[in-house]
Amino acid sequence: MSEEELQKTINDYAVICRDYERELRFLRQRIARLEAEGDSLIKRWKYHLLENGMTYRQHLAFAGGHGLRCIVAGVLLVTHSLLPCFWRRTGSVLVARLQKDFREHNRKSA
Image (cartoon, rainbow, N blue to C red):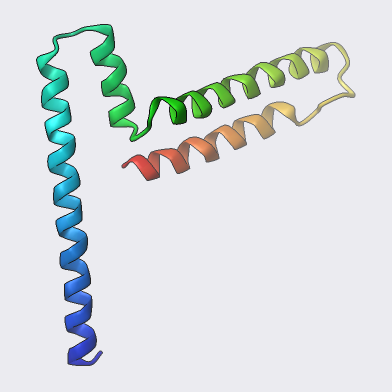
């Protein structure tokens, strides 16, 4: 790696660190404001959204989508319990999909 490339990499890293520090300060300020509100439902609500890095709409889509998927899979699994020839892999496919989605979400919010 040349001296110029090394300097560019260092500068890029410094920019990333500054952005990260700015975001971290912002999140700490938001958490401090939430802690000042007391242990209310609104505080827990905001804190949950904050710790997951989501807006209310994003959370509604993520959690609601997974909830609906589970309801549909539940109906299919009950049908499968009565008629074993139908939807034989529904349970395992659902679990694999949920695991993948939550693993990706946890990686993004970490």
